[in-house]
Length: 280
Image (cartoon, rainbow, N blue to C red; front, side, top):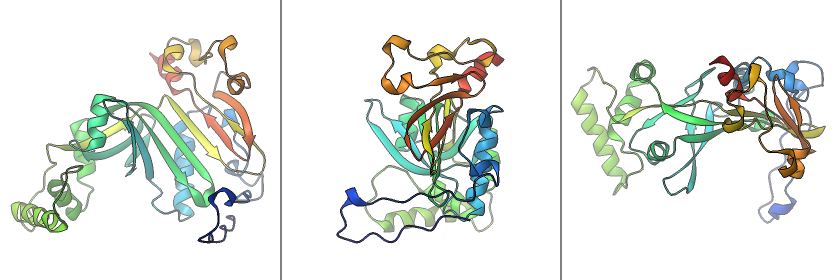
């Protein structure tokens, strides 16, 4: 049972007064996802929880459930965000595909670190993944490419992302040229300028809005996690230098760090880097 959506906002209603009275999506205790998050929920890793939440979003009819807001920075450190589609989610990370000449690809080539946020408003849930980014292998790109509809493959050849176009007619002309090039049923190979990126999580935050208190968690950063014994976490900031929020953290060696920061939000993060370091 999902909460009733808020009434439409009045056109002249001040933004500051717009609020939603969050209610739990189902009676508490009916399933593991209906209660507040706990560190132990991600003791087996972030991916099983993420896949379960994604499946719930699909079942709930959330629009574009695999859409995520990708955050990057350019060579000058200027941030940029845009919405892309996640095309794979497994223990290795989150994968998306794009034109390697696009702004986001150039950003990642210059500063190979990104964040990606999935937002499922019907469920009042959100997941944010942060970590280093690498290009996927050509065979991974090829395997995904073969699942794309023919029109999408032609579009990848015709579209020069992030480059100015004089008109829509120019884009349509490029698409016609691509169709003529490969014919009605000819093979359409992967463009040499197109492929995938994978974000390998150093931290993953799971947020669920609910009627109880707000907890958030942040995984230790890579500089302090590397070499941590048995996958345990270490404090990212010396205690004497910690902020009031950081001082509220309680360490959980098997799952992450949880912090109480306010009301109606639950977040748990996984120190993915600690697990990777322990495995090496």
